[in-house]
Length: 329
Image (cartoon, rainbow, N blue to C red):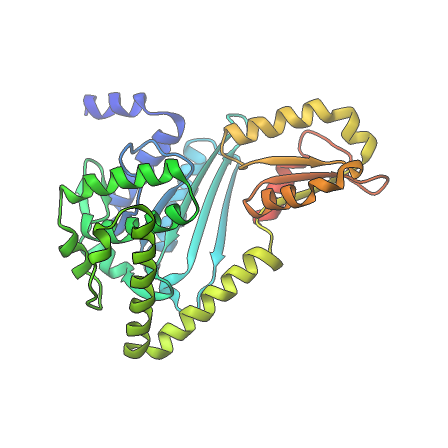
């Protein structure tokens, strides 16, 4: 008991929350699994990705509300990021905000994993073979190899060199725990995975061919479900990139913006440090060439402030905070 209490006190504020939440899940019999980035738990980076069955969500919400009160969070938001026609693939997001500490605890719950719209692992698949580690349940290495391989292919395509290196190191660690053959045998459709042993761009090209073959075979096996998922994938991307910008747009009256510029920048930098927002930009009407760059910040969940003569908001210390909450509500 003394050792557990000592470990608890050594955790950061977010770490204390994560340790408490996952321990409560264990106590109350909630079946969950941590999908990735569990290596430093209870410490997390930007967010925590989990899978849990839908029947546990009422209890999960109750636990997170208890966490809000126990650790003095200011706001608790529930966001259904994506409502899927196939319930297994909906994405539920929970956010806790503490403005005094400038912290955001972001937890995502996924209902399964797909490869180019074709079902790969359901929540039931992932939960059935989960592995207990220290104080939490993590994903089975066989499942993680497949998921990380797809991430690696995307990182190579997007020239994200640091992420490529990180994923390659993760895969090396996973290969020490299980074989690639066993990992790809967990897929519901048997397809050759020789591409896995290719390097860099050849690996990406091989994975693209693999996922296309996987989709076609899945289409013949379960045509209705696969077509719905494919259309959903298109709908999701349209929603993200055209109709519902993920970021926060704030119009501030020109004089108010000029008067409070240093305070606004200081507040935004603090929000970035606390993982409450990802990035920010300020648009002056004299510099409209910046619009494409700032629009990209919005797409990535950032805050963009535009100076708006006469009709903009007057800046106060709660303006940005209230817009953040309004955006998620």
